[in-house]
Length: 465
Image (cartoon, rainbow, N blue to C red; front, side, top):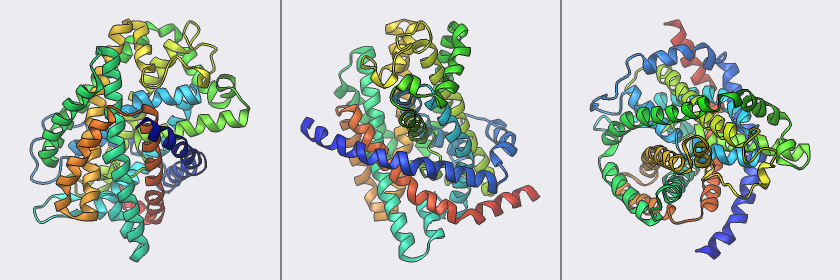
């Protein structure tokens, strides 16, 4: 196993370098900017509408739906996918590699990504299919084949389906279980394999319950887990209040002068900061990746615009609330004047890694042991809920490719990968997931560009009501 990892890692890392540095940044920002202009910045104009539709009738007991999910259950399932290790481990990795300025570029990606995910959710509703039992299935494979007819559309849809099955259903779930295993080992000394067995049992029970059981779990877990993490983060920020101005100053300074903390020349440093912001931003909020449309397609709404504005709130909560809070905690405790990484080149740091950076940061205020335990518990709920959603997204695409009879085989394989994730090298798992995430973006972005008219028409029709 160790020899295989040593061989694969440099190959996968090189592929990711080209994808994230030369393709991903331009596609993500390009699609987001394009839809921001085409919809006249729907993420600004309709932000209040989205908040009202999301929280106006908030209930953690949406009840069993005759088919699909309630709008909030669909959003909770999408947020469960978005708010995972990308917010804690991913953000920490971006700061370590790209410096505090990488968070600024995450914000930029997320702002434009709100318009992107509006388009994705709108198209998911407009192109979804209904089964004989009334349940819905939808996602990029359906709007890709709507955008591109014939063999080319089938090829792109098949490429996307294979990529998302590998990226989220298999490799992505490995990332989540890997992070749970490593943080629980650090905090409680529990062997990784035991964590893996427990995860497999719990996830297996929920997988067997189908969409309805998953929706029931996510609508309860997501708000509670977010509230606990936000409360803990606010306690740290209050304790470090004197460093908050310097923290924001570092984010903006090192967004445009990253060489001061990363080292190397300006060109290398700025490319690293932006690419880390884009790559980890994508992994965090998933706008443009084509994953969350699978959840939004399940929503019991009649107007695609309604779910589109709700989807925007998912990106906002993920990046501008949860991820930003974690970033502020990390920077204010570790990078400011009295922190262990003050004046230290982020890329040169060898004592802290992305897996334990957040635990160390919370430990500055809570104490080393309590900080590690707090992050481990939060990460368990974050990553656990992400595993549930990602398994569903992969399942939808497995059924698209191979039919309903393949779902049980896929579920069994998914559980195997969840267990293996707790045992494998953290770095290789992340690189593999990044690679397939990056590959998913390409066919999804092409379809988004091609279906601009459909999205804009839906926006205009909603405005006329």
